[in-house]
Image 1 (cartoon, rainbow, N blue to C red):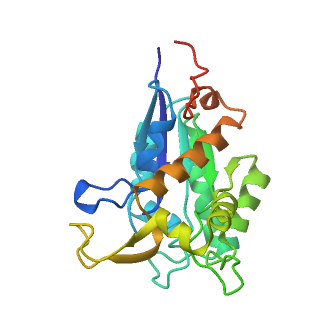
Image 2: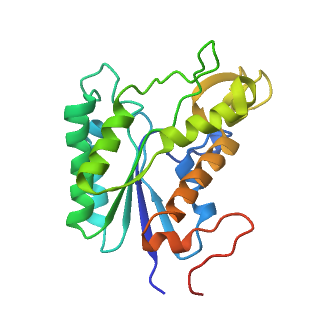
Length: 235
């Protein structure tokens, strides 16, 4: 059976991590757990990258050389596009959207399927318990591009916002890199990180992605394999 290739372009919230960084993990690292063996996940996400810097470093070109007909390209950026450095900075409704279009065009030129993913929400609560929207207009700008160009969209910003609200201020720490001192040998001083996921958080978010894929009108949906669920694909 021909394998289905899924390429991930993104930042540190998507990326793979070595054991020396455990328990930190990106959702792309755990995504293979939710697909049948016919699907290969190629995680090309890199820490600190924006939609702009990922392209400028030649990373999209590298993916383009590998993309084939009926492959998939997932695109999640927004965490670093608001950074002040000119190497990463984009404007939501101009340069950010222009760069997103380059990913979309790269996929479609190679007869692959682009899927936009709005950035995962940071664990930032306001005093009234609501979520502080630290991503500004970037999620809305991505939604607009998806609508205007007929691109599949996974609204991870919205989904992760609901997840954080449901868990609450304290319980949501269990998904992120909140570590007490002397608990993890890799982080002896502990950590209080509201952006980056731990293994459990990455797995939870990867499941959100898989559930969303299962609802998309794509061939990939047939290969989603959720817990206690058999794959729908042919054996």
